[in-house]
Image (cartoon, rainbow, N blue to C red; front, side, top):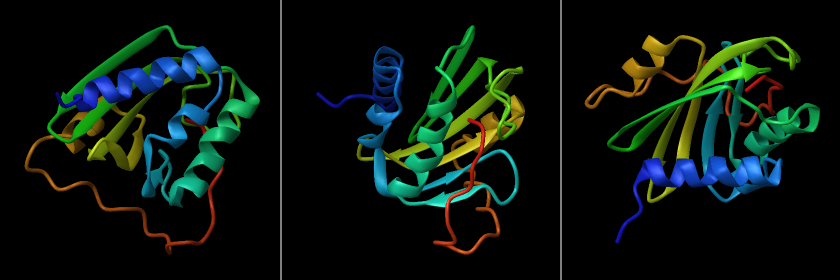
Amino acid sequence: MTTSNMAIIVGALADVLRAEDAEPLAGLLDENVVWEGVESGQRCDGRDQSMGVIGGFFDNRRLTFDRLEMHARRDVVVVGMHGPGLNGTPGDFESAGQVFHVLTLRDGAVIRWKAYRDRSEALAAAEPGRPAPALADRPQGSGPVVAGL
């Protein structure tokens, strides 16, 4: 039996909450994952760069949220989280906010992770038949960008 993309993401999120650490996400990310934050120019190429940014978020705070929303559409899962530090603002780990993560999976691994502040933009990006939004104009391999999840 094949595990659904939604189940893969829910399982990883539960593991992260239990461990209070980002490390369970590392196995979820494809070696060549592209991660993009909410701001233009926030981009990481590959698992190591992406985990550097994601791990930095966890170095500064514990993941807590008071609202969670998830949608699955073919190879895409949209995860909306609301809570302290989930505002998409780099370095702001206190202000409550909401961020929507659009995760594209292939063979059970995340190949693209894009964050949005706006719910409708995130859901539109996940629509079947729509091409993924263009990647930020930033040269590949130019280093990680520190960003709020």
